[in-house]
Image (cartoon, rainbow, N blue to C red; front, side, top):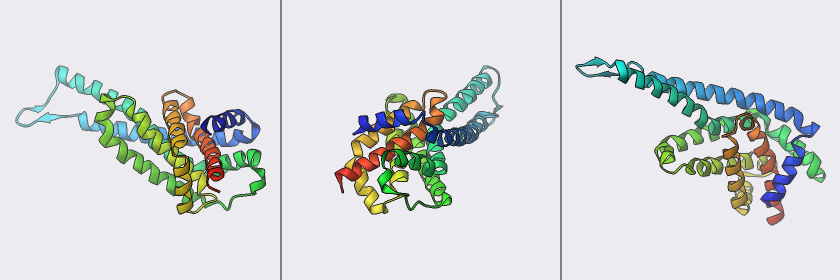
Length: 227
């Protein structure tokens, strides 16, 4: 199922129908990554700047230089880890254009989805962004011990967020949970692929659009399994 969904998604990405969603997704994702990355990076820089020791005062010299490098490194790490919550937040802005383009080409007999308001979609994306932040912060020390762990954690989260966004356009929350369980493994592996795309510059900006299109196919595949 996942391979078939990947092939369909890759074939449609260069099409004219996906051009507007791609451009919209690129701009929104870039803005979300920049906003979150700069905010978290500034927080890291603020924490390590002007560090002082009781009865000694602010430290300087080589230690101060080391803290400066740490602040810079923290900013880079912040930009990298900002992708998952940024992507989750961005999905809400273009879920309908992407899903509509996929369904118009591959599932035309369905007719238009009942859809949900933009504010509802954006709110859902922000909730997943918050979940991503809450999951990643306590897991950060383990990421350095086991490097593949971020792809698994964030892959599960991105896969679920994209799947739910696509499914809830047509389904109830209870039905969405049942369909998600029917394609749990393809959903997670698809999400891991998205998390890996996050490591590639430029491609990470279109990864949320790609992932949403992919999960739209998985959603319809789940319907075939659980009619």
